Image 1: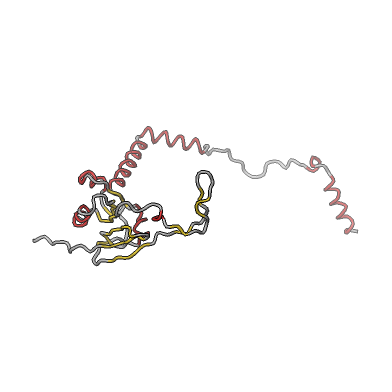
Image 2: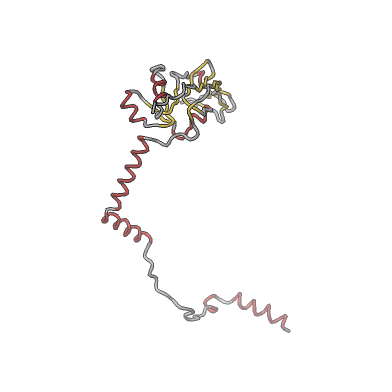
Amino acid sequence: MSKLVLPATLLAVLLCPAEVLARDYGQRGTVFPVIERDLLEQIHSRLTHMERSGETARLNEDLKRRTIARVGRPDPVAGIVRASEARRWHFDPTITLAADIRGAKGELIHAAGTRVNPLDSVGLRADLLFLDGDDPDQLTWALKQDANAKLILMKGAPLELMKAQQRRFYFDQGGKLTERFGIRSVPARVRQQGRLLEVSEIALPPKRRTAQ
């Protein structure tokens, strides 16, 4: 008998309107009022307090100071040392295109998969000289080279050097160029030789010790 009652009861429940089954069970458990402020209100209140207390001005001044310091003396390139022996090798700048290169009108210039050497189109106009700007010997060596050479610092203060030497100085931010060319010590020179680049690390005479 019970086997017939259960399906009939279940059918009745499924067919009943939702309003018929709804009941007010009253309050269950403790209800607390919402006392947490809106997040945007908290942020606005915090910013207002920082503005009135002068904290915002202090933070802006600190950011400005740190930015100027980093521009004036960027973080040195890690792992680069003064050359103790000469090294020389060739670097092939040829790349394999991952996608088609097209002109302004959509014409195909180079198809994907083509090997392209940038030196075939644009030559290296001047030598690249890599140096430690805090090393007087390296600085003297670099300034004696071709006046058109690009001076690229691994360490030092480029703005101060530009003002003092009346030459433009660059900085290898993050060591991208030295990593690309495989340079491990400075001073170093990169110059074009045909369709290749010649990379040289130059060992300068040992630093002179001052008499004590």
